[in-house]
Image (cartoon, rainbow, N blue to C red):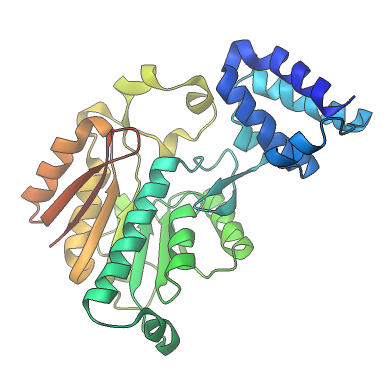
Length: 303
């Protein structure tokens, strides 16, 4: 079978379930994953031959896609902030909105260095460090991306799931960065300075993308998320939707350095409520930012 014929078969099998745009995205992801062919390559080799064994692989993947299993779980990887990350059923799939959060953090820290009139190259070469903590790390996409872009930072990451941390540690190795991973239920922590480390840690940045989807919003969630992604990392009770934000902000009050910053990814429907919570806890310079889809999605603040 040649690639043109395979494409027709692939679309015929999946278009009613996933729609034109998504099927096209799947096809190009898989041609690169299975054959090392980028989109531009396909235009140059329209008669690329697919072996019978390779066709069977495609058929297996098509069967899984028909169940609406996320393609990232099927192939076991995805791209985030220009880096490859391994994923499995124990981790959320990194999303574009979270890339925006990472970008905000990276740019904010670079601006802070510049405002202090410290040359970025001098900072890196002299080993001057900042301490950064990610809470609820999942795949490790946030701390790993930050470490790759702010190499002088010492980066820590917490998660309640031992299985998720195995994935995050693998991703750190594959991306050639060092992150200090900690198995911990953040709701049980009293002081961030004593998490499994004999260190008087004060953090320049604390960031979290905690569970924030209310049960009442489940009807809005697509099947591929609801049936496959870990509920532990997604959902909170309707009667206390800001549970994690309150706890993390309370811990941050004692654990941020002077002029340290707290970043959150948030529930798009609870932007006003999250801002009010942070105001009540004494945070200032609170910035609520929309994502590329126009939804309230990120907050930055400091004490």
